[in-house]
Length: 181
Image (tube, rainbow, N blue to C red; front, side):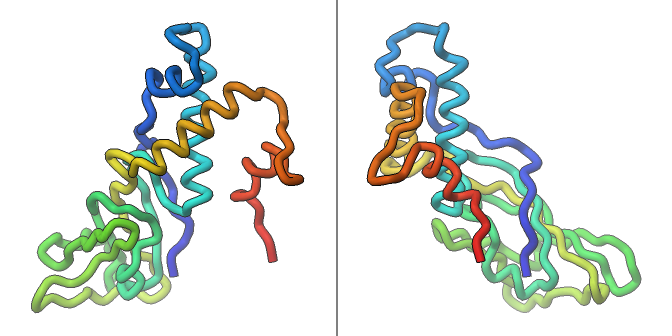
């Protein structure tokens, strides 16, 4: 079982201020750059929550109960594994050698698998395995990039709540943060 990940190195933004200005028809008015920068972050965060993936390249730390959990990583897309640490049966923290495993990053499906003729080490019962990895996109897929630009322009143009089909901007922004039954 995977536990919630923590971001340790913040995401790089994949939408530039120049792209946001152009989409928002803001030309070169640098007085509005702070607002556009905020909207770029909001758009990335919304896409991440909506799609359940990481957008800009960022470093995360995630913990799991078993090496079997590594077959499907909790975050995608995966760029690289920085380290995998575990507590051995003697109670010492160990870093798993890269000779033991490899990353299989197939777009939105990522996993860590054993290399040929290797085996997972024994861990102390009740301990957790810690994965540190770089995840996200270096360049967003075109549709995702465009969705972020549209989101930025919509919120730049309409500073107030807009109602569409009974849903407000407020609903749309918070829908990915609700915890339901």
